[in-house]
Image (cartoon, rainbow, N blue to C red):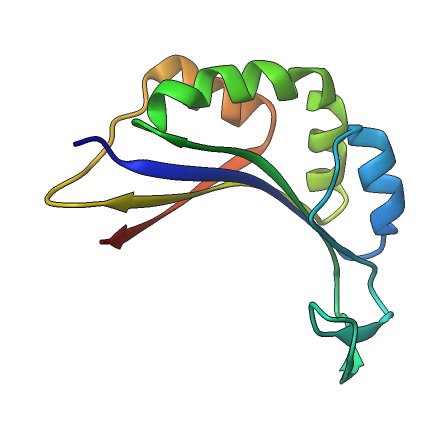
Amino acid sequence: MSDRFSISLRLLHPSAPHEEIINRIGLNACVGHTVGEPRRSPLGNELGGKYRETMVVIDIAEKEGYFVDEIAQVLADLKKNADFFVGLVETGGSVTLYVGVFFKGRSGFELDLDCISTMKEMCIDLSVEYYAE
């Protein structure tokens, strides 16, 4: 049986408005808030305090299989935003591909040098979390 996985793009920045990030990337965000706005629950209730940074989360994929088979295509699709990602990181932000892997038994992964090189050029970090089912 193969793994199931989800991939999302997570962008953080100390000052850029989340709407600006979403509009620049051109993808729909499932989470977005801007630094200084009141913190809210997913239902919109105020939680107290203000967000300390801007955050945008964009769902990219949710599939069965091995996520490394999908990473090259995801990076190719994001390539048009490479300069934006580099600029975001250079001004104090971060760009991360977050992968959740749901597995039975054993699982692991190996990224080839092309993927690693592309991620480095685009200033994209990789975060992988494994969940045993």
